[in-house]
Image 1 (cartoon, rainbow, N blue to C red):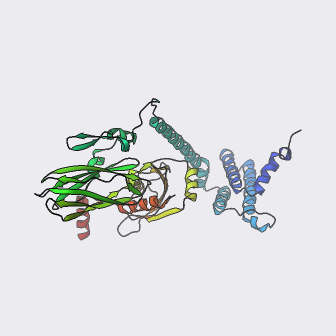
Image 2: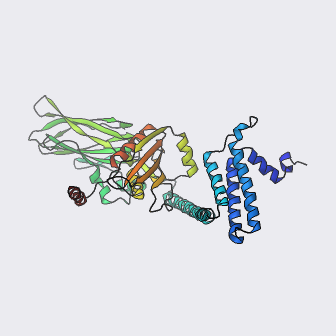
Image 3: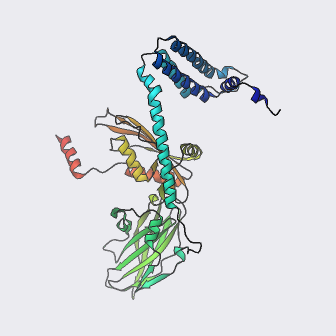
Length: 442
């Protein structure tokens, strides 16, 4: 009693209605299915069998009808249906060619076996990615008691050990929370030390930079290299970028050969490359003249805030279409292997490759891959790598192409582009470079 008009329409009529409504994807899927069925029948019974010939002819009639309808949609003024895209037309033409040419064994293998193998690998990779993401979520999830203390490092008091102030916060626990427990010795504090002044200046200074998720701590060491007492020693800092100085360093006095450690915090609001610059002002005891030493800039690296992440392919395409900021970087590198270059880009940008590389052939001359990362502030970074290897160069194989970076904010796109431009070439060992020089000379 409650049936509608669509329920009374036969399934064949409904399918035809969908095809005539301009669903070209359905036409392509139908043509590929008919082609595979015809090829399987021909493989079982032989191309000369009457049933095989009959099925091939019927499949060709349907495929040609879908192709002709897709090409002539715009001629019907009463129908507001767009024309079939070039990709769909090429798929239908490939189906027609493989059915009309019994000697096209490579195309037949592609339709019958290769496509299924690739699809099986795709499903296996998708399951592995889901297991890894589920495992990472379980590993990051931590149960705590409801009365567990929440530590705010900026609000905690500092204890004094002699003349030095010690932050009571445990940096090791913060590193574990940030997932940095597997860092090697090369990623240790030595890479975070910046020399601020020269060895011949009256005050030698260097800064140890500790980067947390949302703020940066500068521990500045100052050493009096003169034989005079220096008073009113103050460090004046300024920032460029989306940074903000939370607390200003206090003034102090330095005895001859004495040293002093001071700390200051810088708040980070977004993922953007920044710079910290300034000077050290002081007075010599007994003199009213103020001397100023300009300090070297401290570069805040964007990679401290970008973490590898994964997302679905549909979500990546949607964000790619929505994000308005794009930075296009030309590939100029001395790496000649496509996969090695992609791995190098993933390493210097701290990103995850969303494109499975299991299907990449060793003799492949081109590569296209999507990379994804997320900042600690929840900002998304999308990268598309499209490269090709050319053999016709006089200096040997060479990789050419472009890297496109998209993000919602301009800072991430520009900062990632600058980092790729500065690090996409790798330094050769001295022995290898000498060997190349000798070979050119000979």
